[in-house]
Image (cartoon, rainbow, N blue to C red; front, side):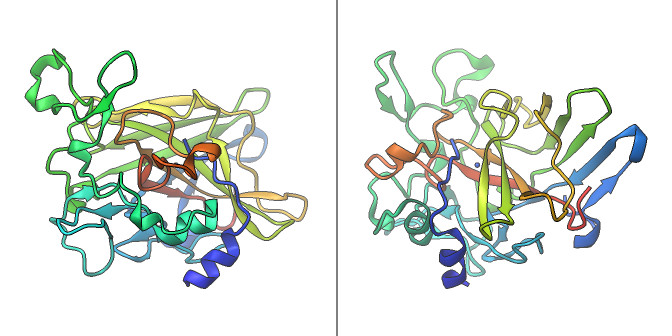
Length: 299
């Protein structure tokens, strides 16, 4: 599987700043169609990697099947951070993690497992302290009640794999004639106060490669902040609705991901910075928490 992943992802430029449904053929719940347009609701599934739960595929996705790879990791007191797999305890603490295969395949960065800014529990992840962009750990929200004083903006202390996977939600697409397409997001049990972005991955029928969309809906439209109860509610405009699968469609949507940013900044994987320390990217400053798989038959 790792060899297949490298082959499929080689040459791809990643531009990420990113409730179990019924059977895979019915992952989307279509509403009205035809002359009235398309309405589709997709149930999300909590993940511990890209289409991955505890090291195993989360879903059989359109075009890429059970392709999955490590993104998230857990704290290792002996260092470096460990990937989340079938041997990971549900009580393990989430921490920054640089998956060697992912960083090599996407960015050509060897030895990412040796980067110094990984294996940091999310509760202690550095955020901006001063106006001069000085970085350092900040207290938790719970240690600054009523939002007074400095805090890291998210309640992440004691964030375990089990807690991480309690997230649930749905994404709804509305594509009506003569109206701009929209998507809405309803999520529960996200990280209270956490900063999130939405990213869409596509399959290029011309090259046979998996490729990411840029920010889903635009670089401002894909940003969300969970409230103090871990709820996310929002509606965003799209330039076009994710298309049906057809011979004339080159770029076919595979899945979208809601991605958590432990450093409180939307900066996760800018290409020219990911290859030089301090590394920013998947698992380090951007970790997918819930996936919305597109229906395999299109819509």
